[in-house]
Length: 265
Image (cartoon, rainbow, N blue to C red; front, side):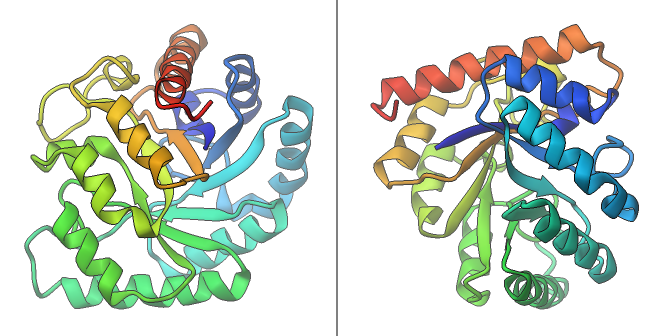
């Protein structure tokens, strides 16, 4: 497994700041945030301009470019994301599921959209991943399995986030085991309680909440998962660098301990 973090944790700071502190914390790689409003990192309207700088940062700080997160399913936006991924060398593009939970009228639209985007990702030689998300059409294990059955493209994968599964009143350890065959990316963070939001940024640090992340990572290891495990902490845009770096470092230590506990490192 490759341990990384989404640069959105440092959304109030420069992209180089994210690279610098994630490298200092000992991460293997980075997931670039292309999330409008949460960061000014991989701004897709300027990706050609940013590509050389991103490659330089990756080389200078020794961080592998593991993924990109761009939540929209807008075809034009996603096309820019795929083009940027190819040029920069990013293998995975993560997007949101869209739709609305328990809305059967929305479901076919969501599957059609994701299926077409997966086909386009495949043409570019990258992988499109989507995760179950509170409030979305895909929001728990049954809907994830349903999407897996209906989207057959080899360029489509599941991005698993235990915090969303936990807030869907499920056991994330059981959930990851059920969908592991198509998991190609993991967004990881902790969560205290089962409310709609994930909590304050510091409460999202691994080890701060109620999720059995040791068991979660053990399932990944036992099933031979060797892809990215990227910390995704939202809401820290107003935090200073010390606060962001502390969350990153605390989580990196917990992730390493989980890997050691299950014999993965």
